[in-house]
Amino acid sequence: MADEAKAKGNAAFSSGDFTSAIRHFTEAIDLAPTNHVLFSNRSAAHASLHHYADALSDAEKTVELKPDWPKGYSRLGAAHLGLNQFQEAVSAYNKGLEIDPSNEVLKSGLADAQASASRSRAAPSSMPNPFGDAFQGPEMWTKLTADPSTRGFLQQPDFVNMMQEIQKNPSNLNLYLKDQRVMQSLGVLLNVKFRPPPRDEVEVPEFDMAESSRKEPEFEKKREPAPELEPELTEEKEKKERKEKALKEKELGNAAYKKKDFETAIQHYSTAIEVDDEDISYITNRAAVYLEMGKYNECIEDCDKAVERGRELRSDYKMVARALTRKGTALTKMAKCSKDYEPAIEAFQKALTEHRNPDTLKRLNEAERAKKEWEQKEYFDPKIGDEEREKGNEFFKEQKYPDAIKHYTEAIKRNPKDPKAYSNRAACYTKLGAMPEGLKDAEKCIELDPTFSKGYSRKAAVQFFLKEYDNAMETYQEGLKHDPNNQELLDGVRRCVQQINKANRGDLTPEELKERQAKGMQDPEIQNILTDPVMRQVLTDLQENPSAAQKHMQNPMVMNKIQKLISAGIVQMK
Image 1 (cartoon, rainbow, N blue to C red):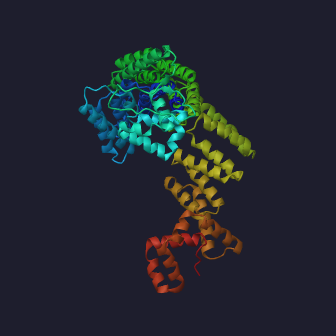
Image 2: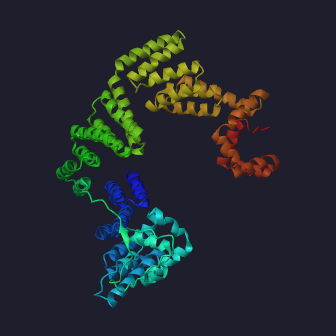
Image 3: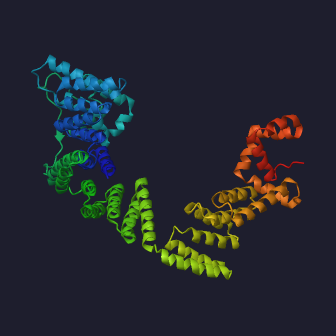
């Protein structure tokens, strides 16, 4: 919104409507009070209307906000020059040149200021000549650019040279008065309209710029409408004062919040809200204090106000998102059951539609996770879980595996800590050929109860089916550590040994060998062994240098890797 008002101000300034430009720049400043460019532009507009005191105030604010910006000192020097404060103008231009020594505008302004200072010292009692002053300062070029009748002259090099000569020495005006372009420019600068000359040659009287008593050329003054009081200027001033007061209260509130003095912070934020109701940040800040104090209902109420008011004012979507996020956070703090998280999740989702903030997304995920945990707690009933597992067992015996899975799943929901339900469902998945699901359930079973032998047998059965005999062997052996006499685990080890020995003897059919090698190549561990430079040398020595290979085989780590390659069918020993 500030950019829109600034654009309107620039357009008005370019068209010569300096009063409207000032109004638009003021609106922009109210929306962006720390933007130095806005103060600079308004200073130029004030100077164009000869309101040099106001121009000086804005120029000083520009320099205060952006002390390393050369243009600010150009505005400052021009304002001082308009107020006949020549030494201050010289000082301002010099400061600007310290920052940007090659700035032509500052150089020209400094020359004008120094020339004016010299004339002031040479004739302190003389009256300022209106024609000489009209050509002083950089604002001359601004006026000529803004007026449609003189704007085109600035594209003509001879005209620009004449105006520069007049700027350097106003007495040179006498040399160029016969040029109608100069006369037209003089009228624009003096805000007067000269009578048009007759077609015949006109004798133009010369002017002595040092004497103000000489007769001036006849001219017809423009009829200017009587200035009308603009009530909105007073309103804008009051609005600006209110905003400044509210900002001070906000700063005091922020300071108190950092000190954990929450009551004082609330007082300052409340005052800011009363003074300026067009900035929802005061409301969201107070909501943050209520959140810290544990006053969640008050926090939610403030957040709702901020969202409603923000929509009315078309506030920044980030501010609205912040209010919604704060509301969601307060609701999660108050949640005592799964349903209590629903409005919090809704608030976070709305906030993300306004602005996708990583913190809000994190809070949404946490709320959804907490809701799920509450649902599990509320649904938890071990007795019903046992009943559902038994129903699943009956369907398993009847080989109705999908129905059995349905009851085992319900048993898990009722009691997520029951390893038997996971084990039984893994068996169903294995029967249906859903090996990844079966493996996942078997691993969860072992995680819940590492001593439950069924979990190991379920997992190893899936691995054996996938012809991962080495992995199946390791799983069976791990189960035997907890139950050494378990016949199912012992039989599993025996079957794995048979398959591994069969591969080692080369008794596999070409199809079986090809399939086993393809599966082995998908194993990341096998891939790492084959890409290891040391192991590549070992494999080369096995083929070409038997004596070196014998030394390699004495290394337990190398031998273990060779065995894995043999088991995978990648390497065959004859």
